[in-house]
Structures are given as C-alpha cells and as structure tokens.
Image 1 (tube, one colour):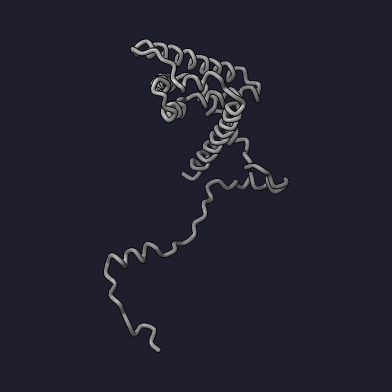
Image 2 (tube, one colour; image 1 turned 135 degrees about the vertical axis):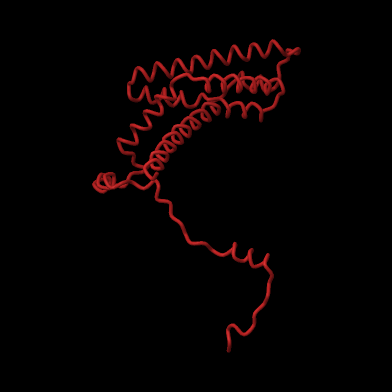
Length: 199
C-alpha cells in the first residue's frame, strides 16, 4: 500500500487554516522563576504558600509605593475626571457609570501606600499617603459640589439613596478589593523587576 499514492489539492485558504490549527510547541514562561541566590534560600525552607520575594524585590516594591504616595498632576486630573463621571452617574441613576468612575479613581495606590506605611511604621510614607488621600477627598468634594451647582435639577435618585446606607456587604467588598489591589500591586512590581533583569 502506498501512503502517498493519492494527493488532494485543497486550495491555499484551506491549507493556511490547517497549518494555523496545528498544535504549536508548548512554551513555558520562566520570567518569574527565582534567581540563583533565591534558589539557595528557598531550598533551605519549606515550600511557601505564597510566592517568595527577595529583599531586592521588596525594596523595589517599597520604592514604587513611596512614589505612589506623592501627589502629582496625573492624580489630580484623574480625581477630577472620576468625580465628574461619578456625579453625572448619580444624577443619571446609572450604576454602570458610577462603577466606571470608581475604576477610574486613583485612590487605590495611596491606600496601599498607607497600609505599607502602617505596617512598616514609616512616618514619611504615612504622612504622604494621608495627605494624598485627604487631598483627593477634598478635591472630590469641591469638584462634585461645583458640578452639582451646574445641574438645573436637584433630585435624589435611587443611586444616591443606595449610597446613603452602606451595609456589611459593602464593607466586605471594600476589604476584598483592598486585598486584590495590594496583591496586584506587589505582583506587578515583582513582574516588572524580572522583566528589567531579562533586558
């Protein structure tokens, strides 16, 4: 029996589709694997539940958090824009717009910096992050007051009423969001330090 006795001409398009659907070689990302010094330290300990971070990685994370605790023009601009969006969303009665404003607001990074300042007892980091959070709150109150004065109608919508009586579920959402924000911040810092080493 001849295996190549019959040849079918399937056309260029079908041939390209068949080639693109073929299984490619398996790739393994090694960017986040520990270095030689870290391997020695890890080999002497039990397997950790969470990813191990060296002193260098922790130093880079702390430096980025210290930078995040300082007020800059990007922070002020995003605070004003997110406040405008949230105010319009509250008057519209639109939950989606309010959530979009929450995502746009840059308050998570100074809150994470505040937590790190409390954890390490760093007075400068605490002071800068409290000033940044407080300044953002004052800025949001001023911006929302000015926008409210521009609207001709003064009505209380369902979205406004829902924000007046927070529950324990809202507290649980805030706690989980804080944990997720802190984890993502540390993960991004660790990943960026590995990318810098590979360059």
